[in-house]
Length: 262
Length: 163
Image (cartoon, rainbow over all chains, first blue to last red; front, side, top):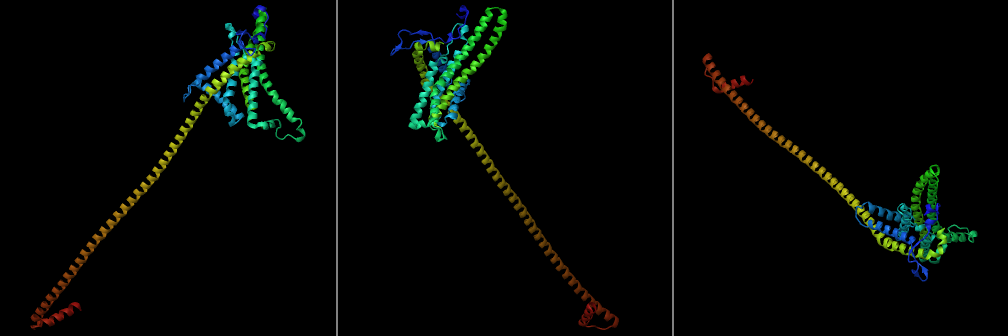
């Protein structure tokens, strides 16, 4: 398709294509068509389900698979214990779900399935998805904060040791930084995912374009671009893990504010 | 940029399916399966800690047993030394008393023998005196032709013998 047009559109990979249910799947007038984005979220969910189910053998001496699953749960458990403390134990299911769902969606979107004619889609490259997860996290933080501390939760906006003559400014800055959190959470993941995929697409368009225009340009431009693509692929795998980690880490830090104030 | 150009048409579908699938992940995997996985890890850690504590207890028990054995062994050894010393002392006393006994018997026999010797000596002396008196009477009668009284002769012999 891209080759036929002799021009690669790096943004085309993010197009949402309804698979079925376009016309009549609606709730209260809102369209809920099952799209390729929904399909890849379903695949990520299924893969995650199989992965965790494989670690549910509950053996005293774990096998490799069980070790891998226990490694992830232990990782999230340590993350919450380090950032929130003993009160963080009850957030393990949420943070684990968040981390693993984002990780699996990121990783599956990087699979080189285009070689087999299938186009992988990364749901986390859409801010509608990341925004939903960010708002969900932010809502939980607000709910926990007000449920545990009531209106005392507003003391979050007055850090310890604020001089009285700055009381008109500091709470306002703290409030803005607090309200920016869901946006930073959503945009960071969305931008990191999109940028990586665009970069790979642009480099691949260099490879295809230069190879089409002859062996000389293919050698000068195509081969270095291809080598760079391989390196960027490794980097993207790292970014996929880091962004999932950052999302989980920041959510646990915000939960720490809500649990313990500061 | 499809994220923005398709926003109006797709946001409801995106949010809805994210809610469905993330909700499934949270409730089925996060709430349902993760606690079981972590319970397994906790059970294992508890078992390992329990086993380590049991091994530690067993080792200290073995140490205490060894210590008790050592104390008992020392007591036995001291007891044995005592028995040996007592046996030695007993043997020494017994041999001493037997030696004393034998020495006493030997002394008694020596004294008896001395007594016998003294008696024999005395007998012999008496015999000599008698013989000397008779001889003196005979000599006097033969030489001087005098009849000497036996009593006088005896007194003269006694004077000559004892001075």
